[in-house]
Amino acid sequence: MQINLCRKRLHDIHEAFLSFIIGLMKLQAAFDGDLHQCLSLLQKIHPYLDIAEIGTPLIYREGMSAVRQVRNQYPDLLILADLKIMDAGEEEAAIAFEAGSDIVTVLGLTQMTTLEGALNAARRFGKQIMVDMMQVNDLLPRTKMLLDLGCHYLCVHTAYDVHSTTHTSPVGDLELLRRTFPNAPFAVAGGIGLNQLDDLTALKPEIIIIGGAITNAPDPVRVAQTIRERMNT
Image (cartoon, rainbow, N blue to C red; front, side):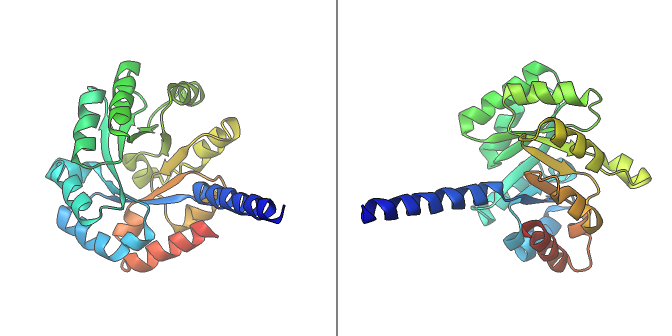
């Protein structure tokens, strides 16, 4: 009886530990500069990251070689390729997965066949897609459709050209979506810094995506460490 009781307690502890790990928010840093800057920064801040984003400008500069180099140097780090796929979903997602990406972005505005194609590629490679909800106006019905489709993450994203000029935050949209879909796997991005962090962590997104607040900081290591500590409290 004592052995069975010990086994049950170990099982309960294991389940609680898994729930804790799964429930932890992930920190994703977006690298939009050149490849040298990306690799140099990663060397300093990768211990604080869960996901390294190869940003769209970096992909335009370097192509999939940026993904390959990060994968070669950091085999255990999750990599997201921010392709913002709008067409040819299966073919384009497969290119990024073959290069070493774990997650690929698809625009939420695109047609169903493109989303289904990207999901097909993700299933073939055992990877994931993140749907970027930037500029999606029918937010609630579109979110339901994407969740029903089986998309792995939905990213509530304030566009760069919007937040850089109006200082708009994604907090409001994330609040609405979290109330409506309490268990949905949301990521959040768009001009996020230390000032918005507490409001966002209260809404428990699966992934918080931060770019310039880390990569352009005078001391990116200190900022990344501070963000990680505040996310884990």
